[in-house]
Image (cartoon, rainbow, N blue to C red):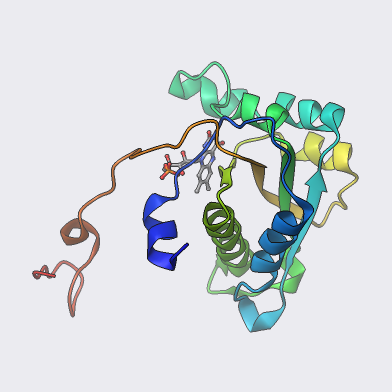
Length: 190
Ligand SMILES: Cc1cc2nc3c(=O)[nH]c(=O)nc-3n(C[C@H](O)[C@H](O)[C@H](O)COP(=O)(O)O)c2cc1C
């Protein structure tokens, strides 16, 4: 798939068919993560690929954080079922010590975000669907997966063949609203 088509048609996919994800495709997606840019090329990301059904179900159960969702009126994470039912679940971790901090900016989150976007676009390009799941009980998840204390979990990515092709989705702000020219606040035509 052409790059711009993948960018424009990628959407959060939360329901999948039973078709397994081929090992070659999984490998290509992991390779796309590997190729992401990072602070000083330190490559702080680490990934855990989960296929075991019982483990996916436990992860799914940890995807609701009451203090976050209850205030927003959600009864569960919209991706709870996706986490349990996707054929593959990728847990994206990062080691903050292997990235930079400058003027109070923690670049491990940027590194991991770039890795995440590569993962999601590669999945789209290969006809697979995924969603960035960022709300979960991190401490319990770390215990479950034996993740060392200094490592952070940045996102969960259920991965599978889309049950249906999602056309459209949450709208985006127009360029005029998000982009200034020459100085903050100065608009122009694009
Ligand atoms: C950092 C981050 C955290 C997210 N966390 C969740 C989540 O916990 N559950 C969920 O269902 N979707 C989650 N999403 C998906 C967003 O809701 C989704 O990307 C956004 O609504 C735009 O829709 P689209 O991906 O279909 O374009 C998250 C996305 C990002 C980037």
